[in-house]
Image (cartoon, rainbow, N blue to C red; front, side, top):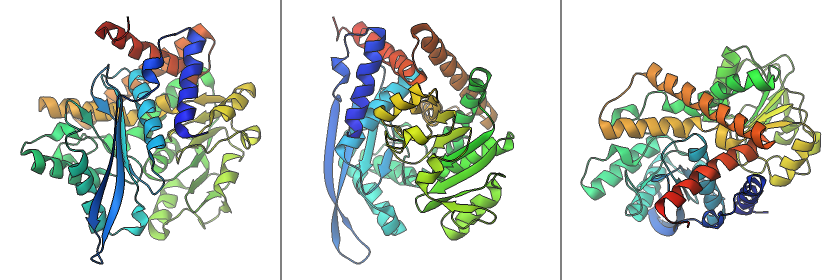
Length: 407
């Protein structure tokens, strides 16, 4: 099943659970753009790259969502991610619709100069599609604040206007928000702290994906007394029941390019990490990692989805029957878009907040979102995922009705 088919199945199941009938408007994106553009490579050759931008629903506000660079990006995936962004923004109750973008590019085979040229050419191709009040991109897989800086610069050159609010996740010098670089991870930790009072998970965690979000969440949890027993990246993982030295592991990855072969730890595969002995499993890599094949072997009591769509619908059912609690991606990893919203607000007002104010607002936003999802879960006797989707769908459909788009 494709990522978009998975997303639509989640939509239908959540709507059915709460008796929401008017969901046809959410079964297709509002706008879809596919572009191709030439880039001069370092060897002098011209290579054509394909890119996408999807605006899923705009009833609650402008489209909002990241841009990823990945060799397997395709329209189906971007549509699914844009839908999940619409849900996520509604779950945490910020005034955005859903958007997502991507370029088919393997950044591991690109020089820094090639990556910059791709970033600028992609913005040239989609610049009429985006804007501070239309569609606001942000970083995603294999893009970062530096890429956002290039994209912002190109957009402003093309439009001839200073427009810091067109892109979030920017460097601080260009109007970025304090706290944004680690907000996805910290938002998840704040939510886990709020959830701990209800779910009472243990203190052992395994993290699949040790990029920016995964390494940051490992650090924040370690500071709070959690034991990180396993971590992995695209090359493999490491495990030790005694717990990993997170700061040393981060340095090891910087030096070697991977977490594998870390001292006093056993090398394992990504598949083995998912099934290791742990209390909390945090998938922080790509989609569809927990499937109907490996779901029966998951040992964690709580799975917190830092990645987007890491559990298939079939696996979700198996986990629910086994009593494993899943904190869904649209809730757990929403800290990034929450602080993106704060960044956009600061850009639009010209007033910039101190880091502690940003973090206090983030903690309040994540705690409130969890409380509302938990309340919906108890009220309708639903899993946290179905409750989150049901809450989001209700808010989006309400906006569509108030606009007169649904009679």
